[in-house]
Amino acid sequence: MSANGEIALTEAQKAIFGELKKNWGWLLAFGILSIILGTIGLGMTFALTEVSIIFFGVLLIIGGVFQLFDAFKCKGWKSTLWHVLIALLYVGAGVMMVADPILASATLTLFLASILLAVGVMRIFMAFQMRPAKGWGWLLAGGIVTILLGGMIISGWPMSGLWVIGLFVAVELIVNGWTSVFVALAARSAAKEEQESAAAGSATSGS
Image (cartoon, rainbow, N blue to C red; front, side, top):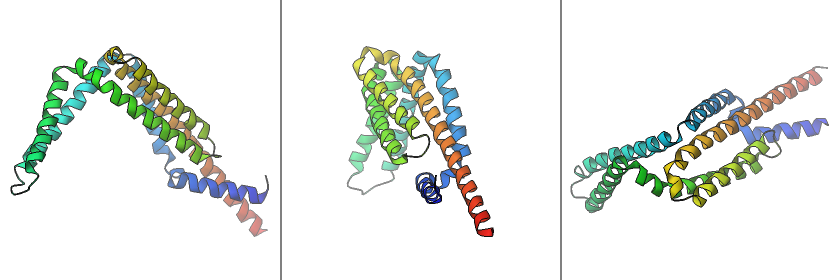
């Protein structure tokens, strides 16, 4: 590759990765952790489904209680009644999810599917933004896999809600982990190439 081509590639990598070239280690660690958690989740899909539903329900209850507390401190506000009603809906939905996580999981499967579809589309856009940097193909593959997961959830609904949430959350964690690992390695490679290019430029100017 010519010197001008190397400079152009270095500038493109700077625009793509930015500060990630300096902090790629954090993304790599996150990717490895995500892979480990997803692998553990594969062995306990039904339990992971229940835990996910209960956890989300508890978050709704906590959020609703805090919103109720806030509503009673907002005397004179014209929207206080709506504030209270929203808080009660939060608490009610959270209690129902905690009381019957299996029933709630069937309802949340469609929501999870829509989230996975959206994430997959965003990953594909990210992949094309990264071209021609190393690792963009893995990001594209991750986006396609995530879209397929979302489609499979919809095709198996509602019976799949008993286990599919836990399974797909585990698989998504693994896919996200490997995607993060490959992007981090691509950023490390870009940083190395940038350092070598800078060293070569210094040597050329010195001679």
